[in-house]
Length: 356
Figure 1 (tube, rainbow, N blue to C red):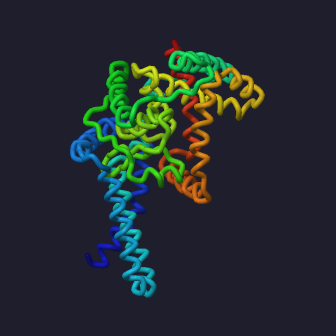
Figure 2 (figure 1 turned 135 degrees about the vertical axis):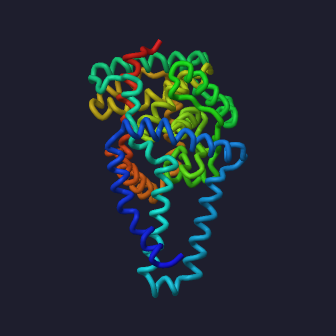
């Protein structure tokens, strides 16, 4: 490849960014022609190609690229130092190709019509509505915990293997599809990530590989939270990118499952977010509500907190800062804080479909 072509590819990232942001200002266009047009075809194709493999092809490709990059830099370090301008040009060229591929393969979903509009939900909620919702969730979570254990003080242990949880999640999507066709999921490509330990140290429950369309789940996550995380990653795979939306999808697909353990996992998951939101506004009210939880439910929260505390490290904030910048660059103005915006979807959804 000659230098003129390399320069052209490297510089093309600038008009690419302009075009992406311009197209992103037309969510109806993205929704109709990409998210419901081109993307389902791409997603289905790649799930068919890679879904049957017992390992993550995306993880393997990433590992090979990382090793190749390290070896290349070491072997060519002297030439790189002498020609830093060309080295950075080559990096820009790679980023340009990756940027283009990312958006064609999945990234334009960041600009689609918000899920709340697709489900016909209200735009906002009051503090009183949040408290009422949280109180109902507490009753529901306590009820499920007691149904499972017959002892309010006993922690809930989900008895399934991770493979069984993945299969049950697929069944949950089939169930959810009967209510909302937009959550249809066929030809699964759902796998435990080879990099689960690294993901845990980085503070992530999983990720979607946009280049192979494989949903990767962190295999180290405790079973108490594993069903919702699995549903979350499939949510990315079916074309939803905003973190609050896939958090919500992970919740409703788990809540719609016929399995009692899944219902408990979903209810406790939603409750953790609503309680966190109340704590930000009124810590006294938070403690009052938290004290109403069965001791067994509290033990599940403590189990999860202990798990994440065991992997805290000095680099985690750096990874979070990088991911925060990535989200902000892709139409999520709140960055990592967007995860917590699930509360609006939870409250307004259950205003329309009350908790039974």
